[in-house]
Length: 392
Ligand code: CMC
Image (cartoon, rainbow, N blue to C red; front, top):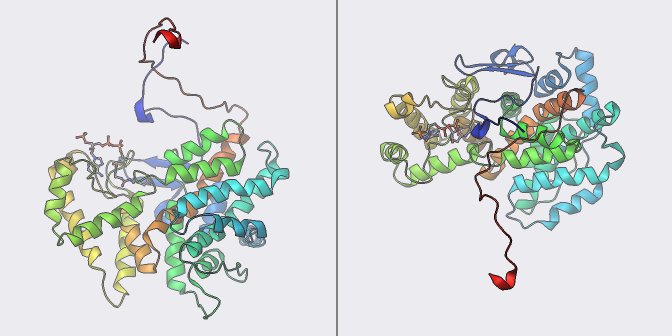
């Protein structure tokens, strides 16, 4: 009741208070629990950062080993879950499979879904962290008609995921340690980003006291869109489209500037960063490093460099403060690693999971939390008289 203000897309409205992630969009600053992203990326492992986000402290070696062990013993899916993957068509988008499977997990753990019970929240946290890589790998394996492997718990978190994704029972698969290290670092870069679309979704669903699986599954769906996590795949599609058209970057940029329907510079722009995205700077360097080790350089990297160079010198982009975001170069790295384009956003989801969990836990543990219930400005018809169907 009373005065309602409209803030379309929440451009200027805080939906919550949070002590997890700090962003200063003008200065290009991102910190998890106070630690600058530049200090964490490449130095702290993904599980270390997950622990930090969830528990608000860097783990000691013993705490980290304990956290990793707990996750390790939960990497298996219930056997019934394995049959679940056969129910989808082979070309099902892995993000759709992922969100469905996360919801399905809740059916196996019905005795531990209470968001108000700290022990149940903890075991759900561990289960989700442990099982998401298994689900992600299975979504891919099914799409190419390969058998579903079991996790190998002698491997670490990222190595296990890589082996399940790329290994086969018929050939020996040794995880490339450089590849594992870069992927681990990319997961760290994606681990949290305060109240973005998917995290806000996780919080909104969780504010009704829906369980953690239901909330995270909703977050996966929010992430799937091309304006959010789906941008990493959309960037690659865009680069390939430019390549197919002969590599003419200027023509493409002009189409963007003319606001041709559906043509945007994917991987550019950000609601909060108006100077640069600090994650993009780290990813760009990693892309250079990874792609330079390949036997044959990917011509798409040159197109990306050229696109960035042209855009950064063009008034259309400069005046609108549009810079490369985290998604601009990640796709090229994932491609070099051997991931198919439709799995890119799944990798984003694996990275964002600890952030979603930490934000959901922060919200549910706060006694002042209220159900999320935005208001609206009504623009419909004024009151009118009902007309029975035979009189219409
Ligand atoms: N290419 C061309 N023009 C753009 C772009 C772009 N990528 N992004 C924004 N603009 C223009 C937009 O048309 C508008 O112009 P005008 O003022 O003339 O109407 C102006 O810049 C402001 O844009 P906006 O749409 O009001 O900005 P927003 O804060 O609502 O949207 C965004 C942010 C990220 C959705 C948008 O920049 C975008 O669509 N980018 C491309 C998709 C993308 O890369 N998304 C990943 C975001 S980062 C990681 C993640 O969240 O997953």
